[in-house]
Image (cartoon, rainbow, N blue to C red; front, side):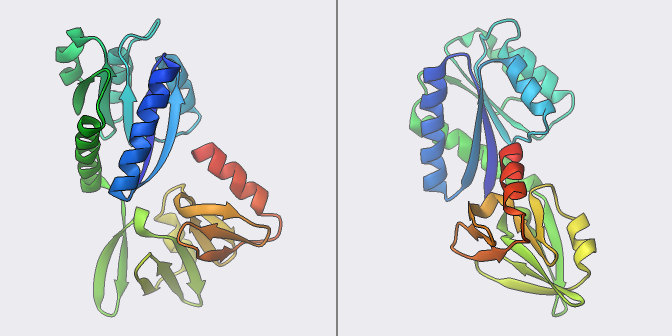
Length: 233
């Protein structure tokens, strides 16, 4: 599974500590995470307007002009699926935390075991709503999570959907398939779409995925892919 996680806290050392715990959780859970940090609620809102998408937000409460609860209320006006977790040294806002459907309220300094449990629960909640690609092949239909798709390849009137353990061959146009995917699938060559979550390295003629697979890219595309990864992650 792939997750874009934001840490919002005005204390740099707390951000660093929580980020370390999140990375440890990801390694144990077999997840791929992109971690972004923001020193204030206002900075987060500005970054979000810059088209960053988040699955989980770990946020402090006492932070300058806008506190974490106010930020959570703003987020909930437009997004009900983001998993909100308060990590704070102040127990006074617990009731308000539940008003914004916060997943949990953790007191600083948070232990790895408690954060691990909460992140597991957040991941389970997200799995219920994760986007899937409907793949019809050999008189069967599977719903393949976007996060499982490494890349998609055009093959005449078919598309090949490559995942870590299986390749699906579906009779459908490449253009129609692309329309069903999200912004993390990048057309790196005329016949290839790559899931940017799985890119480990960019070379002049291909991208190398985290499982070692290589996907060809068009000439001059390496820089565009790099910029897109920076924008999204």
